[in-house]
Image 1: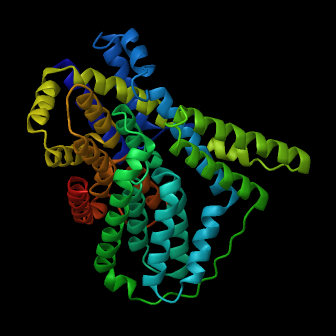
Image 2: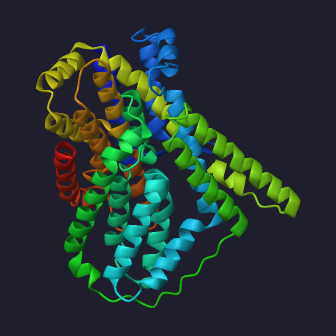
Image 3: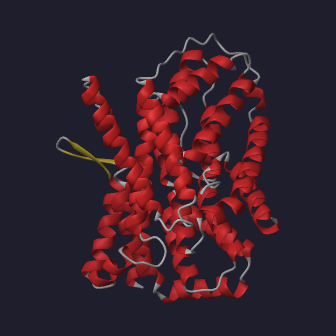
Length: 428
């Protein structure tokens, strides 16, 4: 009971912090409150002996599947590659070009941005795309005097739908799939078409929902941007694409994905440093890219692993796991994980279900159903993912009247897309 109380209290405080006090300021340092709360919860369990240090060490360094340390290396390395391309100016450049190319009607503009965000999400990360494109969309819509809500919803929903197409699209994909020993190509074979079809359905629904708003004219667009360095852009793209390709075949050449991503991140840093030395440039693009890395993800993931691992040993979770195992039904796994993803947040939910899968004989479709839910639960409420709460915070900073409750109004779209994805998982 003690563990259950600590875990529930920690998650509730984390949610409240994301809603009401996302930042804590100590002198000149500003910290995200949510991960400090999860770290405190994990420390309480360690101090009271609910889980011991040796057990934590074994969990963090286990060889069965990808351990939390390896997931952090993979996610942070891929995030660096993506952020580097953003700092070079690629994402803003593409967004501006799309806006200028399809400026005749809002429908064509919405489609252009939706497709662009979808493509970029597949090869980068949903979190990075949301952090990058949200301020751009807010600024762009203010300048053109159009309603930003369709574009913000389109961006967020597209990023969290297409993120399930590749194993590297979301940390939850990596955690669940690698611990279930699903390879890059096995994942791609199953989920790529499901992600694409779900995205098409999503786009159609959003066009219908925002039909009236998108029918209004656009004020003249005077939006220009530039690439900071074409050479660094090419180097960054080559590194990202090479990294993705090598990770795709890593299982066949006996390479760990996290080492592949780490190599390309370090390689990109070295290439950039050499280039700047040769050109005698003083660009601080590497420092900027490292500065913008989501470092809060590290203590959050590690502390959540401690919390959920402790919880998984309690009788309540064991009973829940037995109920799921007895049903052995992909629909039950999909619906329950979709619900819990919006109660616990998608990362702790994914950790919990990975523990359940580790101790049961769930069928492969049930595993994929939970993976889909870990992405799509973010479409129902902002609580479904950290990206959702960051998204609401970013929009608020732009003085746009869009909050938690207005987001939830569009949650029915997420339910429809999640149901569609679950059907596809079962029949394909």
